[in-house]
Length: 64
Image (cartoon, rainbow, N blue to C red; front, side, top):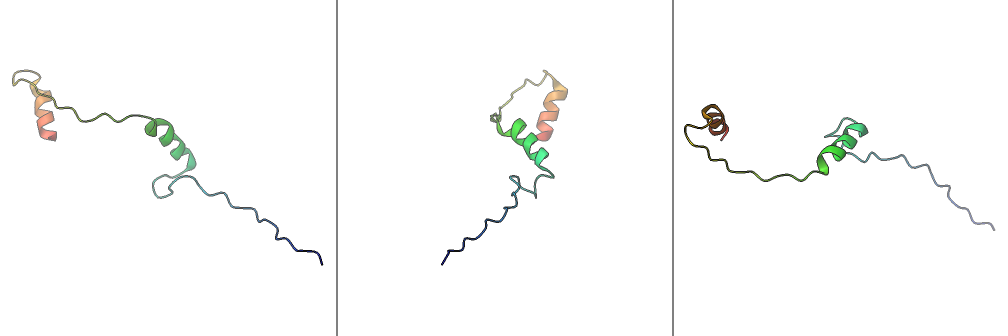
């Protein structure tokens, strides 16, 4: 008696990206190319004198 083998069904390609976060594969590819390869810099403390760059200093303080 000849053995029967199951035919392999064509697998539906699974998306490699999270569909809840990205609208398309192209958006995921852009994200991986532009964001994942970068090193994130830690926060830096900035101390400015009261008379120096007053507008910039106030904005930094406003944003905490």
